[in-house]
Length: 263
Image (cartoon, rainbow, N blue to C red; front, side, top):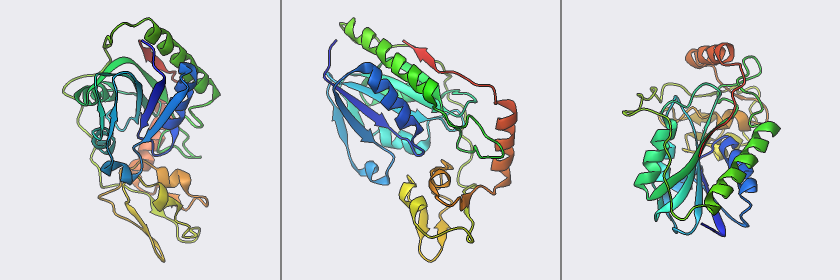
């Protein structure tokens, strides 16, 4: 199979899933590259249809071993037409658990055929200076491997006469989701400049900036995009559960994990 266009489809609040896809795209060597960024809240009202003769590379972060609820909803705005797809899950160095099989099921329902898949590691959403968890990842070595994976997918595509779907790890029924809505970053008023960067990057519009910063906790997905984007470090995690989780992850999952491919 030959194609002149690849569609990079991603939900990427902190930008790491997008970065991995761009590395894979370099290895694919396809000139026509289309970005379909499902992160902004406006993406929920748009729709896309990907022809069978094109390639889709679809990425999501992993939250508690699952595809994030918001990501699952937004992937349903993109329709395949028997379109070959490469599925990518990006996790914070602990485990992918059922995220990849869930992504496979979501995309299959939307009309895609998974011909390859991979897991990559990125800095965990709860990572900080005191308890770093896969800090700085994906790093140069990860992106080198992303390119190599893209090259392997390219070779597979060139030898394909029809889409042959692959098996991916995971269990069904999927593991239960972690409770949401009870944890969200706080704003340190003394260091906040009311610049609005936090509200701009929030994928659910959970943050409002007026003469102060307010967070609608029921909308917060704990993605930490606002924490990573704040130029003064005013957005911080004070929630005890999150701080304990960060300490546990830092202690138990500090050993470097590498990407895994399913071809």
